[in-house]
View (cartoon, rainbow, N blue to C red):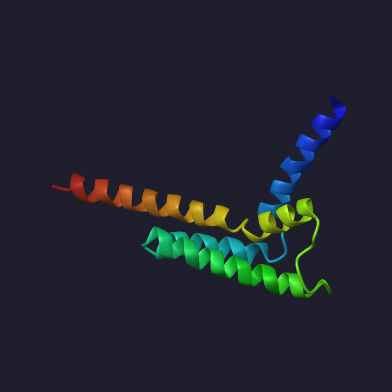
Length: 112
């Protein structure tokens, strides 16, 4: 039972580290929210966010001295989680965009 709890906590903290404790965290946050807010198309914004996150992942991976991805399956899963963690911020940007337009529509409709 203790091993299962340890494994669950490990993956919870891996996700937390992927979203909040990455190198270039502020770059991912700023670009993800900006892409969600300012790019009107969902698919185009999502693709732009993915491309920038993959480029940033490749840039940070280049400094580790390894030419490619790790071969171990769990390491590949963790690296892909780290590379795509910026998509969380894109979803936040889309939610902010939806909220802004919802408030704007209600405010314009309420004026006499």
